Image (cartoon, rainbow, N blue to C red; front, side):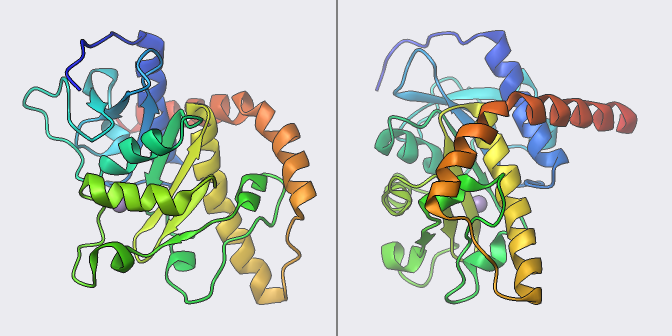
Length: 246
Ligand code: MN
């Protein structure tokens, strides 16, 4: 869509840069992985860094995209190959305001082992109670792909499998999580990784006792409302680490 660009606040650009730094500092992303926010004034656009490592993203590195993945103000800046993950989910899910895609290492085995299911085992991860469907790229594009969501068509297939859940596993690749705010999407990406570690540890001791759907709903209400606290902590930690390494 050829529509005029509307500026976004400096605060949002700084929050998006901070979200990149937090996800890197918390071990959710490394050189790869990305986080986006829907444009607050233009629901048909989203904001995502140019193609670069998350830990190095600055506010001026944020590019505006249409939902089909077309960069609107990139200039000569390169785009992430998998930007279609974000636009396709914003198109399919009007409630979603932020998306995190990662290859975080504790979650990945749940996207590899046949029959494994990532399920909520603690009160910080009630959002997993909505299910963690597994996206199988072979069903959409055959058995010769590079596993990347590198087209709008593959993005649509992923968004279809996400459905109304908050989290989707991607076989042999990683995962994507969504939320109605940037801070909550970051929180969920961090705690999905924590939950995966805890679940695997618990499985070594015995059969895990998973949260019931009632416990998931109740913990979402009480814990996710406090998202400002971990955000402030993680942001300060990431800033401290950055200042000590530069
Ligand atoms: Mn990826």
